[in-house]
Image (cartoon, rainbow, N blue to C red; front, side, top):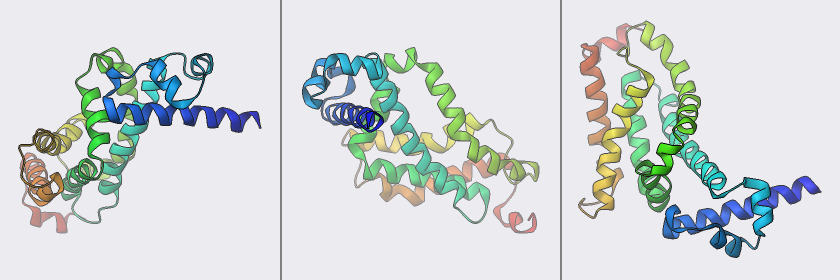
Length: 210
């Protein structure tokens, strides 16, 4: 019973913190705001999370897992040329941005440009390694067979997510016609083409490498 009560309390706090962050941005939300919105006492919040920073860490981890998890699933679920799979990962990023505009803005973009992320760089480093691992394991045989260019996992991620995130920043600024996912084919081909150029081999040769 106590375990269920603990889980419920944590969910109320995190749910309130998420709602307030989506509305105002995390920098504008105080512990007092979360206490009032959730109905959970300050002492209980401190017991479960230690501080506002403890709450932010959980929000950050949950959203990164959702976002990069969707991208990873698109890569791992693609049946075909592994370079094209990274293009599909970029398309999945655009889909996430489109479907979760406010979450992406408040829980990804605003964290990316914050002092908070700089101060919690070790959290992001550890999480990035953990989230990359399934894709790394999938990529190993393709790297060994020269079906993928030999690049660091972090560089693959940067090359794959950089273009869709740049497109979405333009959208959030009101400078883009349509929605990010409308540019799915363009960005998927752009990412795959860039990786393929690094490999230095035409797409047609992949069929004979399996």
